[in-house]
Image (cartoon, rainbow, N blue to C red; front, side):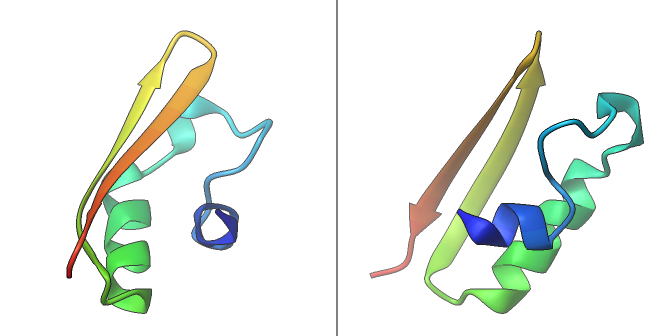
Amino acid sequence: MSELKDSGLEVGKVKSKLETREIINKIRLKRDDIAWMNIDLRRNKCNSTNSRNH
């Protein structure tokens, strides 16, 4: 999802410097088909979950 990278979430970023709420808000403003989104930063993985508007 290129929106994640465009919004500031990319490989190599320091987790403590990521503003996940800000990233989520930027993506939701760009895409009206996403109703809900979560970014989960655990260990060395990032999981993004979203729900789409129909």
